[in-house]
Length: 196
Image (tube, rainbow, N blue to C red; front, side, top):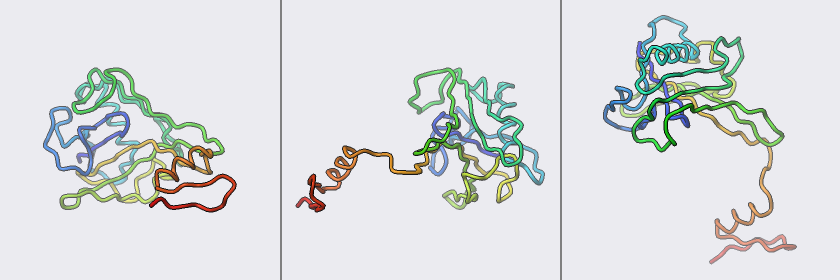
């Protein structure tokens, strides 16, 4: 079965990507995503998709990509993705990166305020659009089969997201937000006025 893979923020399969009606491009041979040929058997995991991308890159089967690596490459049950590294010999068309070389997305340690997570989204084409099939991006381990089994034509999209746990702005940020919304706040006064 053919599975499409994209890594948002690292340009992998990004010309231009899921959910847009575009013509086949020369970089990936599809509508902007890297296509991987996996065995059509029950229980294919997202880790299997990643392993295939790594092998295809090493074999020179993904144009302009010399390395696709991820960690952990032998995930334990319940273990999430910590890092994706892609080395380009040439960037795909229609992207604004700084040029060839390594592009890395990493999970970062949580602080009191934020956490940077790597999440995957499982999409299936439905008519002229895509629907997301997985409902739990944060806690879904990538070494177990996804909630909906992978079938021919599905797309996996990895994205790095920042999750806020608490207030992280300062009074200046608040004033800017209020001014942008057409509201002004007066110091020492609980009243907020709407601009007319």
